[in-house]
Image (cartoon, rainbow, N blue to C red; front, side):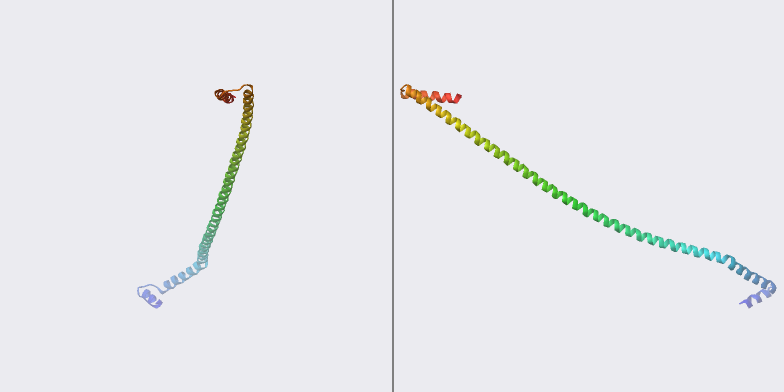
Length: 171
């Protein structure tokens, strides 16, 4: 191929010396570029590739950390829900127990009031019976005294008894 270039150049009047000079200059330029420019360019490309690789690794770690944090938050949320449900259940149980205690206390108070009222009624009934017995006894004594003092006819006895009964109603 180089032969064809040399021959093509020679046939058109290109001097072989010029061609060799250009070829040598090109090779020197390539060596200089390789020595001075290629190294920094390759270093820059390697640094860029390393930075991209590090960024990808960092992004992967951040994604894994985010997933772990999300799982932890989910577990904490579930734990909080479970705890809240437990607290609610305990509160309901305590409220039910308190309600039952209040109802039992109210029933006990009502029964005590009822028993007290029954006892008071029995006492008042006994007092009334004692009062009636005393009144009947007084009435009997008074009637007996009147009968002894005067002998009454049947109509007079009825009138006397009615008068004493009316007198008892007024007392």
